[in-house]
Length: 87
Image (cartoon, rainbow, N blue to C red; front, side):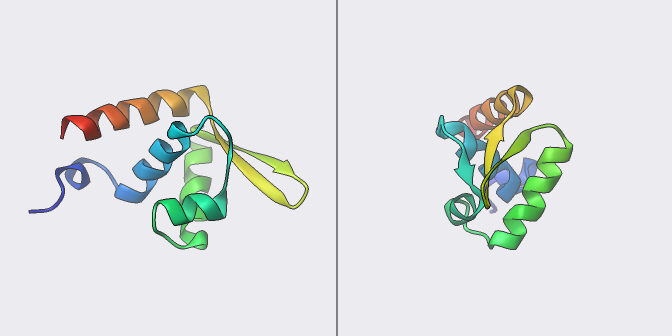
């Protein structure tokens, strides 16, 4: 049987939110992509969708974009984390 978590959530976007929640500081896209085991381009596409939903923000520092959770994103990530722990 599949992982029960995958029955309810798309794995990569959910893991990205949880990974951003576990660290208090902002993350780079390439590091986040490695943490959730996907390509950088796939991670960027997911992150753009999360930004449209108001869950993450991008903060440009020179040539690098840092990714941070919004307040709404923190709430969603906490909920996903709780559900993952229940399953």
